Image 1 (cartoon, helix red, strand yellow):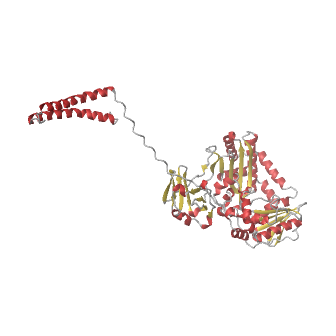
Image 2 (image 1 turned 90 degrees about the vertical axis):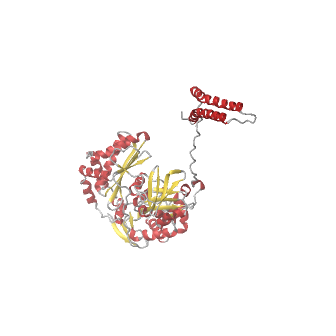
Image 3 (image 1 turned 45 degrees about the vertical axis):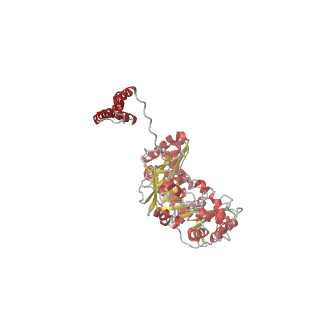
Length: 573
C-alpha cells in the first residue's frame, strides 16, 4: 500500500519494503525542456549538486547513480540506512539551493566526455528526424551548449526547475527518515513540453547506415498499448531471430512520453549480409499485425505475465517510481483493480486497431533501399523553399552557392538545398575566424565558411543580427587545419590546334598543275622585259603594255592555286 505525506512542501510517497531503504527524489525537468543552445544544463546542475557530496557516500557520483536526465525527468536516487538516505537527500537539496559553481568549469570538462554526451542510440536518432532539434528531439543530440554555460545560467535553471513544487520524493520505508531536509526554492509544477514535429507526413522512413532496423511511433498511453508492444516484441523475436536467424537481437519497448502519450520503439540488429532480408521480415511482421493476424498464444502469454506482475510481493514499493512520475505529470492514479480490468479487456481486435494506429504514426529507419516498397513516405533530406538574397558561389565549386538574405540563409549544391530561417534557428555556433554553423528547428544544418565563399564579416551582418541572441554560442578558435583554404578552380586548358595533315599525292599534283603555268608565264615576261629594254633599261610604251597584259594573265592563273593551298592549310579540303 502506498501512503502520502509532505516534507518541506515536497510530496512524499511511501511503501514498506524489507531491507535497506531506497529513495528517489524526482524532478519534472529533463532534456526536452532545454534548447539546443543550452543543452546539457540539466545534467550539469545534477552533477554539481552531487559533486558537493563527494564520491564516498551512498548515492554519490561514484556509486552508480550517474544516470543522465531523461527527456522529462531528473532523478536523485540513494540506497542505505534511514540516516544515510536523509543525509544524502538533505545534501542534494542544500546543493541545489546554492550550487557550488566554483567547480563549474571542472564539471563541464568531465561531463563532455561522459556517456550521455556520446553518439545517440537508435531511439535518439529517430527522435531527431521526428521532432527536429527541439523538445523530445534533443535526446538525439550531443549537448552542444554544455561547454558554454555560465554560472548565472545554471543557478537560474536550478532556481526555476529544481523547486519544491516541481518535485516528488518516494521512499521504500515505513516512514520519513529522521532529519530529512528537503528545503528547495519555491516554484510551480512545470508542465511536460509540447511535442514538435519535423516531418511533413507520416508514416515515413529514413535511411540508416549501421544495418539495423528501428521503428518508432507515438500512441495514446494505455494498458492495451503496453500489451500490444509486448506482443510485437514476441513476434519480432520469433520471425527475425528464432525462425530465420536474420537478427541476433529483436526487441520492442513501451516508453511513456508524457501524461497522454507513449513512444513505442521496435528494434532489430543483424549481420550486414542479412540486413535487406531482416528489414523485409520486420515490415512483414507489422503487416501481419495490421491484418489482424495475432497469435492467440502470444496474447494470452503477455496478458498472463502482466497479471502476474500485479501479484508480485512488494508490488507497492515497485510501483513507487511510476506513481511519482504520474504525480508530476498530473496523470490520474489507477488502482491495481483498475489495471487488472484493463488487462483483461484487451482482445485481438484491440491489438488490430493499435497496430493500425502504430503504422499511421510510424517512422522507420532501415538500410538504404530496403523498405522503399513498404508504403512509407521518404522523410525529407533537404528544404522545400529557398531564400532570395545575395549569392556567393563557392570558390572551389561554383555549383555550390551560399545565399544570405534578410530572413535566412541557404546552401544549394549537388546534394540539394538546405535553408535555415533566422526565426526557425535552434543554434548558431560562431567561430572567431568568421565561420557560422547553423541548426534549424527541422534539424537541417549548414555551415558558412568565409574562406570558401569569399564572404566578409560585414556581409554576414544579416545573419548575425537576424538570429535570436538566445541561440548564439561563441565557439573557441579552431585549429588552422580545420579552416578550409580554397583557391579558384584552375582554368580548363585550351588544346592547341592539331598540325595540318600532310598533303595527299593527288593534291600535290593539283597544286603543280594550277600553279606551274602562272610561274612559267611570269618568269618569261620578266626575261622578255629585260630583252626589250634599251641601254637605259627603258621599254617602249607598246612593248610595256604587251608585257603588262601577260603579267596579269600569270597572276590570274595563280589565284586558283593560292585558294586551294589556303583551304588545305586551314583543314577544310
